Image 1 (tube, rainbow, N blue to C red):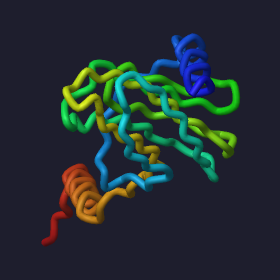
Image 2: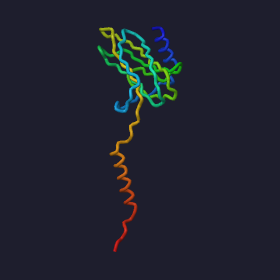
Image 3: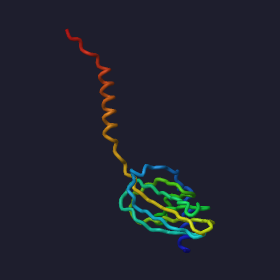
Image 4: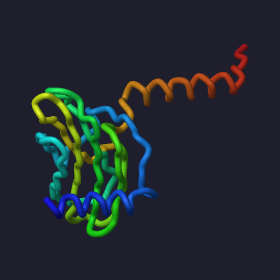
Length: 159
């Protein structure tokens, strides 16, 4: 438990400059690398270790399932070694780049004053797969380009 608090506090101290802008991504584009759902009792910090095996763009998502009630406070710090990758001070998501695959830590801190004394959260880390343009869009732009080209070339006069 002391390790969780220490890592979380370190993440918050180092993470001020690493705070990322929250984004929304279509779930169809995600390849999940790490997925966890846990309960927090009262005020608690939880550290989870996971591995990223390839470089790329990833999405970290923190979800408050509001079961049995919403958290009073919920935060996520993502750490690699001693480097803070990003933090969230509420439920949401942020993108981050991984150039060096390896071990990572998701540190979640929650405070709940629900009548049950519990709160349910989820952390998901996913590789954002860049989906190619659908064939229909490629055909549409090709057709528009051909129409423009045809308009630019004057028609030949036949006698």
